[in-house]
Image (cartoon, rainbow, N blue to C red):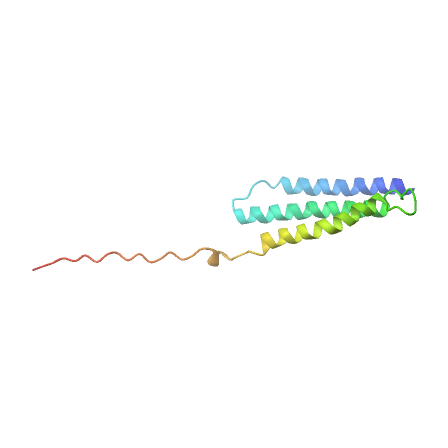
Length: 124
């Protein structure tokens, strides 16, 4: 099997797996609990970023060779860009969605006790 054929087959397989995962994520529908919805959204974004990173690895490993030995291949440029961009985005998402998690007890303050005014009656 040639390198180009292997590249195309690998991209098709990974794309089919990504489509299957995306279908499974969108078929779920909506959640009543907003916390579940936020976690599901965060998981979706992280899965998308993982897919983009996986494609960049495939392009880097199996993509076309550079035209001359002194130039970098397009796959290496894409991979280096993903290595610089994706980790900060992932840590931003993880920090936002999972760093501020509070339990339900801590999130809801207890209501203040309401003291009814005492009735003052003058009997005399």
